[in-house]
Amino acid sequence: MVHVYLKNLRKSWLTGIVPPLFVAGFVATIAIGFPSLRKTILDRLSQMNNPIYQAILGDLGLEGLGLTWQGALFMYAGGTMNIILLFVALFIPVRLLSTEIDKNTLDVMLSYPIPRWRYLLEKFGVYLTYGLIFPISIVSILIGSTAVMNAIYADGYVYNDVIYYYEIDINLVLNYALGIFLLLFALGALSILCASIFLESNKSLSAAGVIILGQYFLESLGALLGGFLEGFIEIQAFSLFHYFKIDTILDGGMLPLFDVVIVVGVGLVALIGALIIFHKREFAI
Amino acid sequence: MSTEIILQVSNLTKIYGREFNLGGKKIGQRVVGAQEVSFDVKKGEIFGFLGPNGAGKTTTMRAILDYLKIQSGKVTIFGSLDHHRDRFEIRKRIGYVPGDMALFENFTGKELLQYFGKFRPINETFLRELRDNFRVKLEKKIKALSTGNRQQVGLIAALASKPDLLILDEPTSGLDPLMAANFHRILRELRNEGYTIFLSSHDLAEVQAVCDRVGIIKEGKMILVEAVEDLKVKFMQKVTVKFNGTSVPKENDIKQLNTVISVERTKKDTFILKIKEDVNELLRWLSSYDIKRFTCEDASLEEIFLQYYE
Image: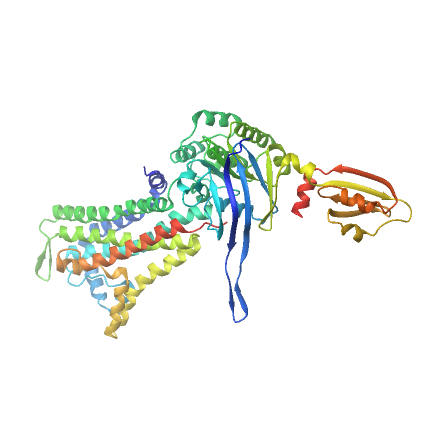
């Protein structure tokens, strides 16, 4: 039985559901305001062609999407999701383990007959379970808001003499949501790897912060420096945030297999490493 | 007490940290936690593990539990189980109370017992007995309990499965004297039923009250393993010698004797000596002096322990 999983699932429910609900709420707000915000959004998209701005926010892969309802939704959903992902993947997995170290509750727990690797895996399972709320909520809110807008504004809207309808590509939404979940898995695995190495929350959070935030900024830095020297853009390949871009999903009609292999591979290696280290390591006084 | 050995520790060595020599300069720090520690605990025995702070008690306990990797030595539990290889099997049959015990604060005592009970089934009859003896309210959340009450919940949790071997690191710290006495009674009852208890303590009264044998560890080395009853007889005696007239020896001359542990001069012609083993050597040496008075008494257990602590 998965007693550790169930116990932690119950304990962490608030931490688990707040971030995805925040993203869903934010995207829903954008959806509601879209008819009146449309011009602002388009202006904002033109600003985002500025390489410095892109370097700060990261390349959201929005090229060609700006005029449409779909493009606007993904711009806000994607941007917000990346920021929230950063913090969720950084804090939740580390805290699942390091809180026990800081409070010393692991000492008693480890004297019970449960393999350590399984203990950690069940805890990581809690993170993944709450991580599932992200894709589910984002799919629900994107498809749901599109249906509502379609019902209210069935005739669409006109921009530069062209009629645009409130449409969204469900295949794109599903692939995007899957990408979000895989990214959450890989970043979380890196985070729990740091926790199993350093144990204490301060050290674990610092290490996970360097790795996860570092990747986020590496992606931005690649875009910034790539604007001056083309070779620099290659450094983005070292960032997990570089994968699963909307435009590449749109082009291929699905998540690029190479991206999936990279992200899942990094996640699996980090998770297996964390399980082995936690299972074999010693717990000094 | 049976002769069956439940816990056997042989030449256990644990060293923390590493030291490197870089161009004649030492880098890092190497701290000896336990050095070639050997002892055994028999079935149906309460074995007290004593020693000053930092002597290596907790290190030894955590090494037994396989929390620490040892450099050398062997720990065998329940006859043939290796503490590392068979740790999963061992943990089904042990109860552990750490020195600095912390429990899940958002659980009530009851929820905690239910949770731990899923890993090591609870003996419901014994749990009722424990609840009668400890007066903590298990319906309250752990975070709402005082330190002593938390300790009681931890003890109940460790004992509730009635494990074959209990490993207790200063189990009564934080308990009031009444609860401590109740706990000692429970330990004695468990011992009488054939369960084995390995406990560390700084409370010498507790050791005297419950332990059958004690081991004393100092600076990582086991310096003594002895039955509590034999300690007073075999180990220290307090001798008072009053010399006559001018034939008074020098303090340092007395200290030269192998069996003399300490010398205290109380008057110009009177000494209080602490002697280990027997007084034969002292008597032979004193025969060349003119003695006015000679008294010999057993030292108290506390004096004996403190002698080893110093």
